[in-house]
Amino acid sequence: MDKSAVAEERSASELIDEKIATLGGWRGQTLARMRALIQEALPDVVEEWKWMGTPVWSHKGIICTGESYKSIVKLTFAKGASLDDSAPLFNASLDGNVRRAIDIHEGEVVDADAFKALILAAATLNASAKQAKPAKLQRAK
Image 1: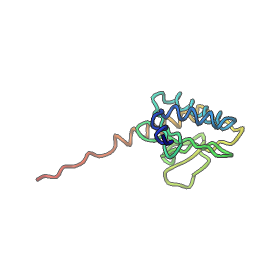
Image 2 (image 1 turned 135 degrees about the vertical axis):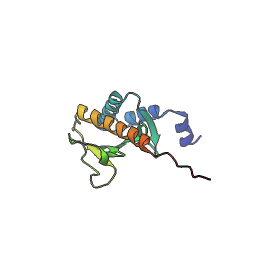
Image 3 (image 1 turned 180 degrees about the horizontal axis):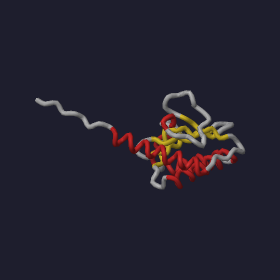
Image 4 (image 1 turned 60 degrees about the vertical axis):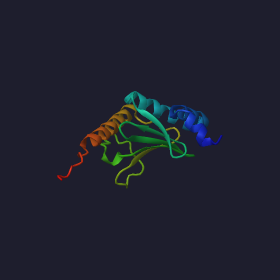
């Protein structure tokens, strides 16, 4: 059985659990903490596993992804440029028109309350965008 078939048999939450365990150390701890904060802020968040191994958290659209690199854990907000970041938490991907990211280095701690507020703002934005889409017009015959 190939890897993609195995991944399809397991839930995204199980795959994210495995990713955190595999990362270990500060990166695993950081990703686990940020995941817990996402779930605290938005208990009905949907966990997904996309793009060959990227944890994704969604609520009526993608809220953010959780990527890990050698020197950072990166949380990329799909519509971050449209969010009020008064804390400010965003420190990466600041030049784009849509996304914004939070790069967390070893030893850094993200403000929990500010992060949860950002998660809620992203979910609210997703919900409002879904509601704001105009209905298709039917042409008179």
